[in-house]
Image 1 (spheres, rainbow, N blue to C red):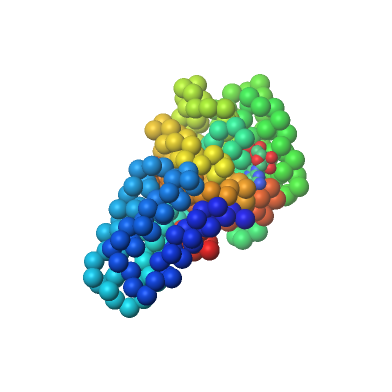
Image 2: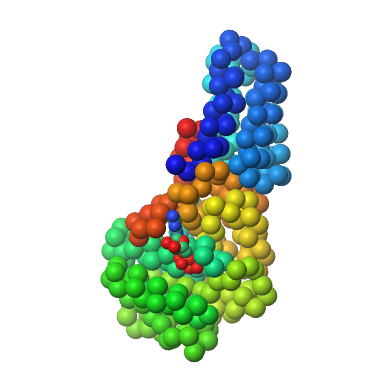
Length: 297
Ligand code: GDP
């Protein structure tokens, strides 16, 4: 189960509190110490943890809460609310263009789940909105990526535009967009190249593609299992590209939760979707409040 380690640690910290008839400032301090450790162990960004703990402490301390009714329950609620705020408060919907097509550019490091996510999201829109997406294969450095997109497209009955690996991505995108206009596709997804790490060549290429495509969304896929590194990666991409959101993949394998809790705070960018498995249907809208409840168990 996702976040099981964090859930266990946090509920232990809270249980200490609920066992008491009344909650003193000292009890609260001890609980906050536990919460701080739980978050650090979950690989949440250090500054995010500091801010989180300070906010909870400020909202929870004082006579109103500690000497009021059910102080322990109130502290749990404050923690729950703060988790929600840290993850962005509200679900942020996909940006849509007033006229077709809505163009969604997907970026991310190699192996983060970019190609899989393109297929998942296109499939979601096809099912939910009867959409007619076109997928553009613009990752020319990894021939397997084009094949992978072709296979996914065939399975899901979604057309894929590709020109192999010999044409540069800018030209592929130009021609792909012309194709989409001709076919009146309502969504266009651009699957871009990834690298093992951020480098200038990759960023320049992504900037060039973005300039040609003028996307409505630039979604970054990051692997939840990389913890706060996912947030650092997002920060790096964000410095070069106008990211509109993040897709957090592989949440199904993440026992810690550091990525989910750090990304919004570190980058200011909303997590829009989460990948929770390898199947095309394993993609969900990210709701900060539901995620907070899930984390608290
Ligand atoms: P790309 O290099 O960023 O395009 O990454 P891929 O889309 O090829 O994905 C890399 C691997 O991660 C593949 O084996 C995917 O099946 C897997 N993957 C992607 N998203 C998820 C997810 O949400 N959960 C799990 N368990 N695996 C995923």
